[in-house]
Image (cartoon, rainbow, N blue to C red; front, side, top):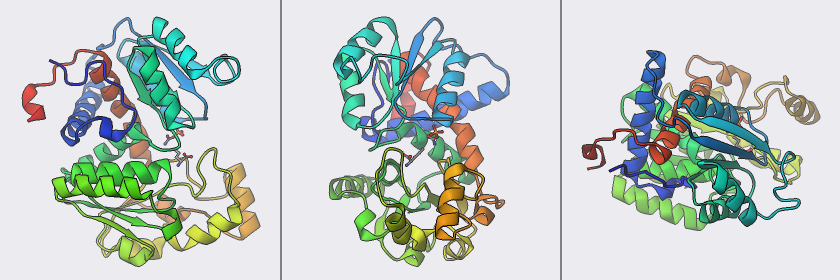
Length: 338
Ligand code: CP
Ligand code: NVA
């Protein structure tokens, strides 16, 4: 029996901590198969809809390559290419896509949209990022940590930035589920919602890990094995950049903050990142506010401890594992789930 068969992955808690761990290990296995050129066509003949309301590099590329490696056909459906939203409701779109495709990936704004797609399409739906959650990123990031440390339980991850964003929510939840201590360094106004913190603490109590929210950046950094940050303004957010920069500049991941860990932590970022002026937005905000970088300095971003491009590369086997487990019939021994 495949525990995952026909299940959607809309947010991390759709799966148990053990199931998340199995997906991470399965992603590692699929990564090895690809490296050894061993075919793994678990989704031969399947058709996958890739529905994007927001832009993407990694998620789109990873779903496309993973589907192709698995023997499936991926079809990109951008928000301006189809009737979705403008002329057709989410519910009706779900019914149509579900009648033709074997599964649907959705990236967009409201979590309610991906939930509606799952409730009405009759096929597995995968969340490729919403305003609330970024679950496929979590499988890749915790795979990256596991590759470096050989285990997850007992590690300490410190996240700096907007704790209420999809990344803040997903990191506090996933770390707690997997037994990783999680520190959120952010001003109190940008901490995750109380319900998400309460839920994370319940998982942490089960897993024996710690959840720390603090406005003291040094305290958040202390003892971290990995330091994580993300953009200060997420896609679709309408905020005054001056206000957000003032709130989060004390949490910029720079050499001093990294030193405050007292370790040589891995440096993580889901990307894209504003670490220099080589982007339109990074240059414009950098010049306007007199900053060489925003959430992470170029020095730290390019340091030997930085694993940001490993995380990006791991999006592909992570997404492949999610797709193969929920839509295919890979052999996943029962003992893995005990
Ligand atoms: N990290 C991530 O989701 O990247 P993209 O926005 O490029 O997909
Ligand atoms: N918090 C970011 C993550 C991008 C992968 C955003 O939503 O824009």
